[in-house]
Image (cartoon, rainbow, N blue to C red; front, side, top):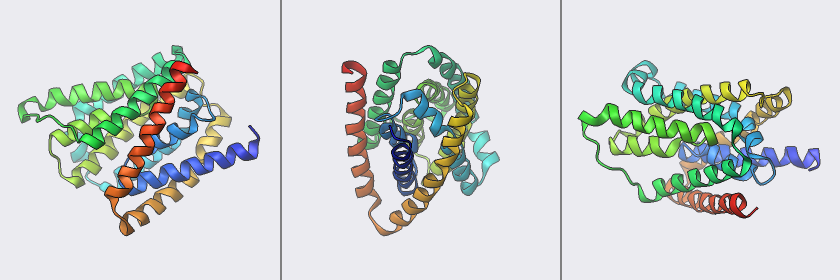
Length: 248
């Protein structure tokens, strides 16, 4: 692909993905990976995504506040997420591209299903620690392979019926915690070359511009309508990823 077209494509991808994140509060990796894998191999796509994941969630965590209190509240899930992201990201080095495409497609389908059905089993308080460990473990395995870890964590938070403000604080903190071993694993594996680091740094510009646009859109339009349109697009992306994984 021509270098100008490649850079222009990355700019558009992260402008859109940042807009999604700003408008609905999540979906940056899902949107960016779904589009990037149309012209970049899965590992390179995840590598380029690392700086936006780390810094956008750090910003969300900072703006939400109450970091220490939130960390104490969700320490079991954060611990499990960190451990299993680190394990699975190191295993992913030996995984073929078609498996990563299939895992990414399945993760996005699960993301869509969770948001459409709003499925969330009732979790009694006495099982909270166990539920956190399960959600963190499943999210860590998914995140280490694909960088998409939202579905099991969102199911847990919804099942515990946390208020909206706490949901934002918790997702910002937990996603940030998970992004650190993801970045470390990709650096350790040698995927984060100087070229990839430059690209990952560059896409921060359209990401945060999109984030700003998304926040403005959220104030002007129905968040539900926008979210449903995005979920439909994610659904098509997921089917295409599964098609490419199994049929080439």
